[in-house]
Length: 498
Image 1 (spheres, rainbow, N blue to C red):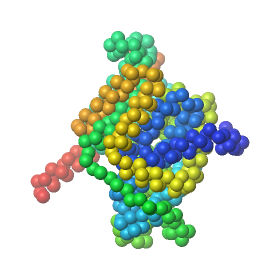
Image 2: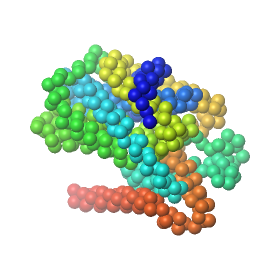
Image 3: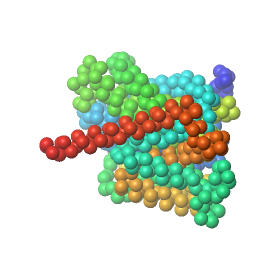
Image 4: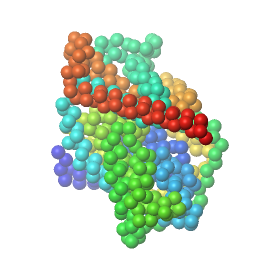
């Protein structure tokens, strides 16, 4: 159990303070670059955490996540281009305020609302995570198999587009996860005699290839040029304005908590839901879309709340609910850390570092956000070839630091091409990532269950937790299919009766 003095010790530990600030700064800069999402920003720094202390490495990734969620609002407000998916709702009123000469005010509302949302999310993270993790003690191998299937089905069904494509991407990820040594028999599989594949394909290579390298390829074919205005300063909201915004911020925090706990939810869903509900409960709904302060406060409070609450199902059960938490799960696995009650018992310092590091980053966010704005504007205004070259060099150097292997570079580059082809064919990438990350859990749990039962599949029906999880997974798939058929039918009716 974490004591007050443990927290004080961590707060006064210079390396953790330094790590939290560095993570926050890197996250804000990455989030401010259009197209470089929070997950890509985290994936870029992930290889460099390989040699770090596990507690500091995971805290760094969590702080990058917090910074990126705020950083995405900067281009959303200034150039109508969301830096991250979750800042898309901020564009509606944030850019309108910019057009009215109120960019500094919009940036200030975004900053303070983000801090409030992050603090609320952190309190919920500290309150709910450990109690929920103890539920995992009742889990058997059959239960963990059901949990892995639930994670795959939820992400696939909520990945947008075709459910079939989402499930196909998840299966590809599972196939990649089988490369290497069999977890039960020790037999090598799909290595083709290549020694570098004996330990399988590391999830970090898959994430960097599919997120970062794929995004670089996509942006290289785009001709859009973005420019930010210089000379803009953040104007923090007054107490009177904060009193006006408290309802919208409360709505954002509540929905951010709900979406963060929901597998398959995320900051973008929470932001748009919060925007709609804030407009519904506002005393001046007619101002939404025309530069409403509440229209900026609600989505920013929501997506920053999700940055903390999304860690609850991740740390409790090992189920990531978004791209960013999938990268964080990869960081945990890279350091040999398994989410659940054992993480709290055996690696309590990692959990404490996440809590304390996140708190440091959230409090520092106000000062850092004000100071770093000119740097964000300068960075975004650099010519695209220079930015792309710097990011590409960062990716390659990060991958090489993992094992000093050129083979790893080849794997990542090949997966970048695969990711680009998937984007062209409109296949979702997240299910494939989850297939790789959760593949070992699904396969090893399935195989252990069959060993315990002597090959009898009825063992899965004898575990009520496994049955419940598999039924929920089935319900998500059915719901997604029903929604697809309904949308397809609606489109046909609109085409037939324009």
